[in-house]
Length: 97
Image: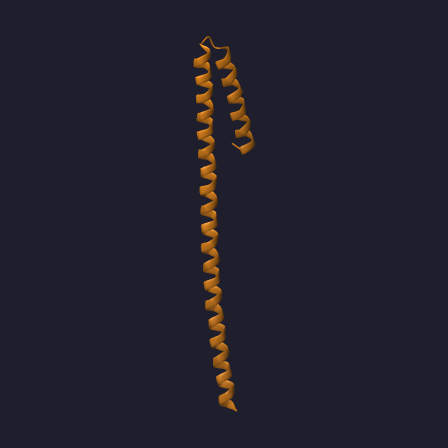
């Protein structure tokens, strides 16, 4: 489910729950407790979702950092190989003269 649909679903659920609780035959104090509990539950759910997104972001950043380090190491190794090859060719040219 996309985030927009998820948000709409949650909002609709909250509204439906709130209306159901408000019209239910129960004492006002119990109704208020139920509403508070519902919001606390939603708050925890959103905290979990945000934490999941943060964990995902950190994971991607760590993977990107590892990939960049690997690419840097490969470029360094290739540069070293090119330098060594050029030094060999220069030495060969010097020995011919």
